[in-house]
Length: 290
Image 1 (cartoon, rainbow, N blue to C red):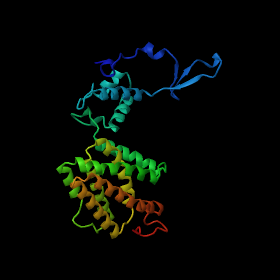
Image 2: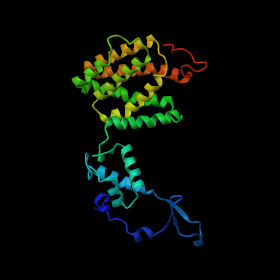
Image 3: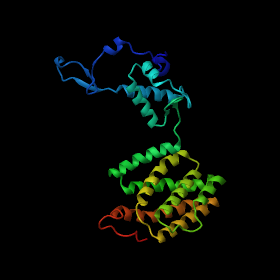
Image 4: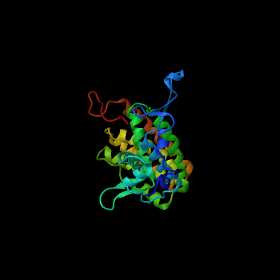
């Protein structure tokens, strides 16, 4: 069986290694430097749990390319033996890697752990979920969302007019219905999301999408909870059409100007929705007066 050096890049610790040095408080997770009889109160230094050490070793190997995309890892039992940890500890480390889309685990015959590379969509989803939790905990204000969205999406519209491919332009066109949807908020918001995501894609900058998409998706989810009237749908449709025309014509200045005006129009709507009680709640008002 390969030893720790085969995966972690150094020799497995011996029993003397594990038993020497500062004492470890397993219950509270810290090392105790010195002793109470040595004078001042002992200094407590936090140590990482075993599964965190294993996780960091494997993550480092994946990041460096030593474990490339598609590489099949040894079995859970073999890995546990190589790292000198229990199978439960190894399972926790693998679960942490899987949550970051660095390992894909399958069960059953022929299953196992395979190294994977996170996609932009996966990372965007993770960021969006974390931003949503911060928003629901009232740690983020609406104005912060709107300010950052304006900075990113206006720039995206400008760059999309310069860089979009015919396929990306076609994706924007498909997100524009022939007529404004009139059968409810869900379809309107869904088409709006498709259009904005297509504009971001047209900028041909994955990092820009990674930053802008999660912010937009949180705002979209909040708006989709409210009934929006036909006037909103008509104006949304018309403004998207104007932005599309500017991007199609490769007029970057006009595309940026129209996107800025479009987002500024929505600021009032978002503020109204955020200040109103949720739809159906006691005292809730009707659709936003647009």
